[in-house]
Length: 342
View (cartoon, rainbow, N blue to C red):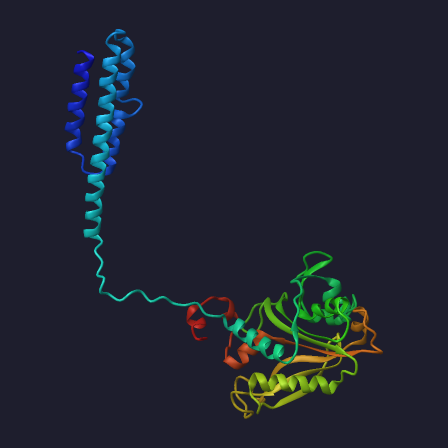
């Protein structure tokens, strides 16, 4: 069989098989079968070298025309087949445009973030500026500069995550105190929000990480009365002007004297309930006058300046005033819980 006859036979075979193709996958297989590197059309191109020099140009033209014709036939069939496939897909995936759309749920702020922003807004409005300090801290700023000696028994009050002999995960945002004193001269009036970490057993009342806000004020003639007035003003802005406060003496290594602040239970109004453990009072923070040793570590003369500091737990505030019984709910990402906070 001569080359022209082979060309006609290939054309006839291709068009016959093309008529039975009904999907794009089979069409691609047919195109590869005839026009691929190992297909018969490529074989014809190779066979041209066996033809005479006089016939080769004409026969080469016929082979190229066959290749172009088959390629165009494939392209035209592909357009038709894809249109049919899309039409079939639309008929199977029919959508009722009159149905209501899917509800788009907007994100919302986490309850801890809500309480944190509320506290910060109040304190910024009272004249405090925000300072941040690192979560990974040195033993010096977290303990030693805050009047915790190496063998101080108060270190046992805070189970610490040590990364090595020098660095640890901070146990409180009080590490901001001396860092700020080293950078700025009095008057200093700052608040320091952030995460804290303690190696404690996770339970309904405690977790290995939590959030605190530290407050610091250093200036000349700062008194204990200034501290009490500031905390009473903060409590009234947070809970309402009629809130009652109570101050109890307490111990913290970095303040002297130290105190804890309670407010009249907002749930039972002091009559006693489960939230306040039937005492009528809720503890909200610890505070005191900054210890002279801490001022000295911050290069501030305690004979000339004095100051106060306090710290409050944001999870504790949120639990107390939201009647939340388990601190673990804040980190479990349960939408049934989170959606209760608009």
